[in-house]
Image (tube, rainbow, N blue to C red; front, side):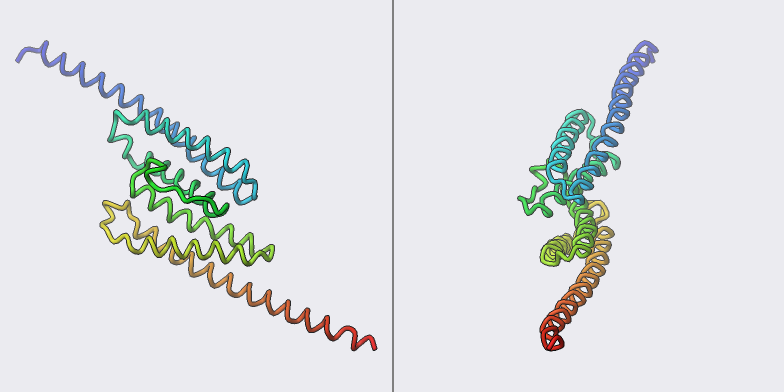
Length: 216
């Protein structure tokens, strides 16, 4: 076997692996940046700073586009776990913003993500809504809390219909189980808080009616 041919083959392989390794290092950096922007956007939403949340979401969109474009020549990196996890965070942030602000819900085509990444991001968005609901309960904004609870319930109803193997959905069953537990706890806490709130209002009305009589 001519060693020159083998060396040429080895050189070609090294060139391909060098390019792939460089793309991987860059992708890891971009994944961390995308995850950071998504986390900051969600935090801004919880603080009701929707202008900042939208701006950060737009920055995350740009980061997701660059990540996907850079990895287009390397499908094995594009569909690697760390890349799909970062894109899942992008889905989560997008859905949280849309649901909380009552805006249009983006789909997987609009976000340019796989079905599995979208569904798992949808599941994480549902669990993230619990935090928002608890904040609303603390400020007695029960109507808005009930709206978000309904959104959680609707997301769960969709997730349980995705009866496909975990290899296709990215272990969605586990995420769906988490959503179910989170939904049940949140519904119980909201129901209890709402009953206490209504009881306090009823007692206050009784006191208001009894006040003038006692004064006489």
